Image 1: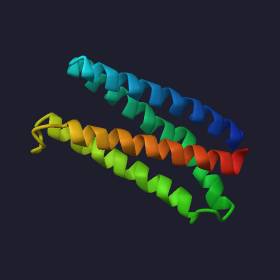
Image 2 (image 1 turned 180 degrees about the vertical axis):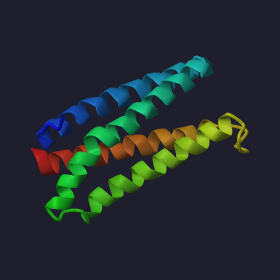
Image 3 (image 1 turned 30 degrees about the horizontal axis):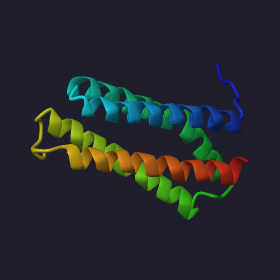
Image 4 (image 1 turned 90 degrees about the vertical axis):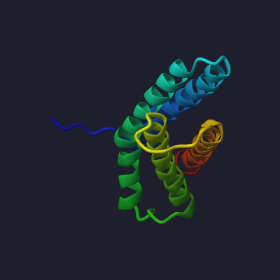
Length: 135
């Protein structure tokens, strides 16, 4: 059974999800400072799973709307997508390295901070795209 959902509604739901994820990741950063690494990793894994679901269920349908309207090659959108792809790749690397499936760094602090910065930057760029196209 197919249903038609307004793209702007999907974008609004995604915006709410992204704000909640930023709050969740900020909390995760607080938790790691309390030396609860297991909880920190669990929170981050949940956040990434939610993010991948948001990409599939909210971002992809709105991206298809951009493609239909010929806006695919907007530099800001491409930058936002590049940040997202880098972030997902970095997350895969971090999980494989932390699980000792592949060799990773001795200290994950720099790479985790890089991931947080990438996620925050992707959020800010995505927020600007939202303001530009939907407000």
